[in-house]
Image (cartoon, rainbow, N blue to C red; front, side, top):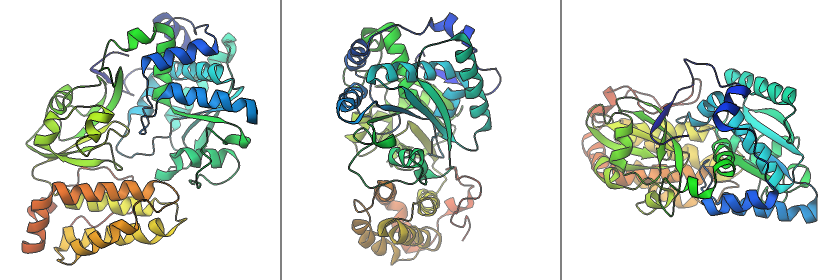
Length: 423
């Protein structure tokens, strides 16, 4: 992968095994210790949202095998974030790079079985992966037995404990932790759950070395990452970019703003809003964004035009997230719908009491659920109330704003619950 490169999932066929090997060479022969050491030296972190050190996760799972039996590898390609398209694009464009990563990760931790999880409605992705696995079996490539598993197309279904729960025969819903999957996962065994982009990077690191990976990025955030740039940018799409760019440089990768911007949503629907002038100088690394109250998340950056209503956009997403919860505990079952309703009343009808209702509810929702679904929703809502403070005062003083006349920017899956788009 190269920096500042745009990926597209249409217009060309995915690379077959022969083309993949001409480009990247054969699957590397490396022992488990060498794989883990290379990944640790490279400083690779997870690209699914948590940014956890991948080398540390490999060692933890490998060590657990001495107590609980042979580990299992789970490659997460579900991409439950509606605003993100990076993983499905990578799965179609470079399936063998991901499958190489699965094989090498399995070798590192001592796994004989692996699962590649994708959403059930991704027909093109599933077809591509089945063809790639058939090619590899025909070529006699070494590696674990890899099974493609389809997961319901719901936001929480791609959470790591939800994947493990389904693989163990239950519904694809998050479970209480601890234990975490790396301690006790599929069939009670230590389970490595990694995002498919993370595994693709792992395959390249083992091929080319840690020093090669660190030639791009920053000392604290080395390498490149895939990002989805959407909203009011000239050329929306999935791009591979060097970590450490400024926000302004990141938007320039997609041709720059297509019109004056009000804010940028960083990290997706569990992320946070940043005003455009603050985002322009922010550093695009997990730590850099966290230091200014935002998040890298799954690499989603959505540019909001100045003529849109940030409160109404957030209300639509909050209602979607409320409808996507596992409904297993009070914060999600009761708290998220109440927050979404209050934000809807505030954004669409200028209800003066709604802001106070939201402020009173948030402490009873965040940090109290079985999973992090309510935490992510509260983070998004809180950032909207902070970043769109002037809009908040206008809404409660003068009623709904002119931005409501504009079509929504943030994507909501077809058929999902949404707030009304007009007063």
